[in-house]
Length: 276
Image 1 (cartoon, one colour):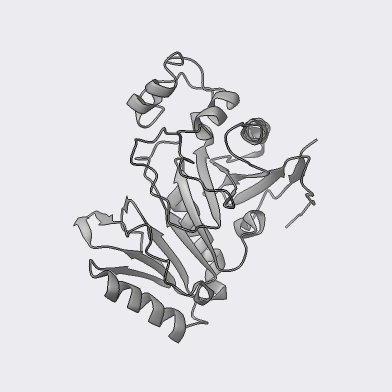
Image 2 (cartoon, rainbow, N blue to C red):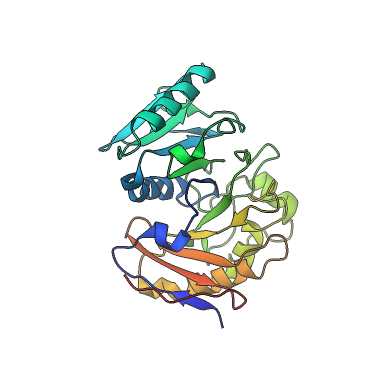
């Protein structure tokens, strides 16, 4: 039986992901990547300046206390500014979002996949990278150029939203519909069951494409807004852990919006119950 770590209120997401110190984490998929990244930035910034990047393109984050956006097409200068902040303000609870210059007033361009290779990661409690986009959808199949994973990452977090489950599959449910139909031609208008959602999320040509051995995969199921959804989330988590394409020992699920989080580990791992 899978090991369930439960927490229904005032969720501390960093405790369930349990990333190692100074880790580099790629986030892919749909259903709330940006919100999850911002929540983790809030939790980790007490340990020092937290760095978030994107290798795709993002909307400028909402301003909040301690948020700093550094944006420049001069990558040498951009790296220098980030390095100076890390060295000069090691105890500052700053949240840094680093991108290239804007494409439009509402879109910031991503940095190259090797952007943090020369950084001293010890300067930052964690580095969080958004590696693809989903246009607000909760599940997607990537196009051939996606995702753009930041190099030498320690973790990969594929994200999916619970609200895609039990809906009739169509272009209003799955982002990149053409790519989906190429991989799942017989599934049009089928119901999005937990098994099928897991098959899409963990497909060999899906959002985890480009994964390298040694990078730990910790999926996140978002929009599990209340206890009534936990059973379906656990079904989806178990389906994800049974996938044949990528190694997954643990799945985190919950709701960034509702600040609730739990995690479930496969029977082969040594899980322990936590309550907060």
